[in-house]
Length: 331
Image (cartoon, rainbow, N blue to C red; front, side):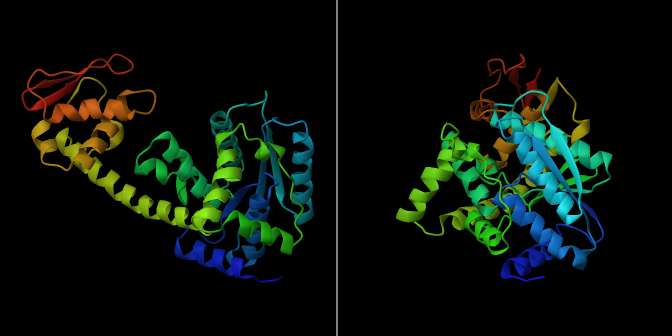
């Protein structure tokens, strides 16, 4: 086996960030593109050092006329490498990026659960992290949206989603695939500029690279990394503040009552605005079916210092927040 600098980098990353344990079962999501082929090749080469049991999963969205051939290509690679292969095909073509992502993670989770894999591993790179940051920034977001692609997160009970390539750019994965002559399956939808993410990838990132910073993808990915740690800290601090405001002690989130509930304004008034907003967002997450908007969070936060008897107009679903003395009631 040829041991490259990228092999060494990923080996160190997995060890220093505690992404995997030894002798675990890893399910690798492989589309056939350069990032996922780079990922599976790296993990195959590192397998002997870690004692992993690897499997490959492929999700066919039925977006393209060649999607079945794409699936067969990945299956042939799995057979060549002597790895278990799992295929999930959508019942009907999925045309939305968001719907496809949700379906894909559900499919991968089902495969992992049925076959006793502890980890689902994807080939998201620093380039993906940079594109996600830009995409969410353009749409409007806080720090949470800017750090959306994290190294690992629980996907379902007992199954962790892991992204070991978040410090590797797409240029590096392409060079790695060329070096090892890996048979990349070119996805034609990646060139379709009707998708905003493709315009960011094909037009905005190259423009920024050429005119502002040749290392813009790595720079943006590092920004996302810094934000991730700060978001984790702020979320924990906001959770503690919310528990005090709700007078719930150390009880878990799952025990937070549904409506009606009340928040102590005196407790919240002592906190910085950043934590006030996060508390209100966490509360709204309990009562709204969709994510709370900036406007929802702001009108609830305004009640912390509003005059007595102030109230909001209804939130989606009909809930109203009202000030009664030292308390904000949601009912």
